[in-house]
Length: 217
Image (cartoon, rainbow, N blue to C red):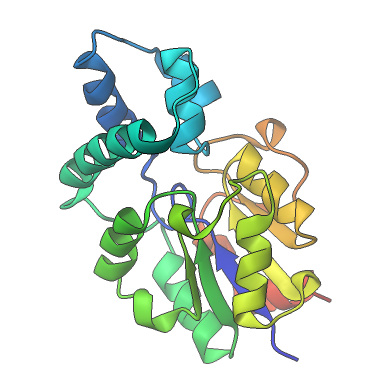
């Protein structure tokens, strides 16, 4: 019976949050807005752009306006991050081990596809994953389980045979709501800031295929 591992991207495959902060700071500074790091922690990490924009602008940002603002901010992020792409320690070795052991793999991110293409493309993951989903592929964002249920459907694996790697409160919640096992990656948050996970790691040097098998029984 096939088993699957699904990765969130930001804060899981790469530690991108500091660069998203930089991009948002630039984006907001153009508008004479200066959110604090504390505000970013509460209202940016792991959140969708529609939530972030609406929160900081103090009104609902949707439709065409959201697309324009999102394109601007994500363009800034890609500019800043393009030559700094660096996977979290041990990720590539762990990923290789999963493929050798016949695990199906996927990525499920709230980021736009262009970001996914930049990061997963640079790390040569696009053609090695069986499911690739970005923000454009869902109508409901994390903590809604849609992106994870859709991933399981793509992979043709039952949710309880999927192990998800997540680093944010909304992401862990989404995976749990989908009925999947969750490994909390402590790149952006501490254990106490996340819902209860099945396992926690600082980075992928602590993981191997056997630990994933143990999680799915």
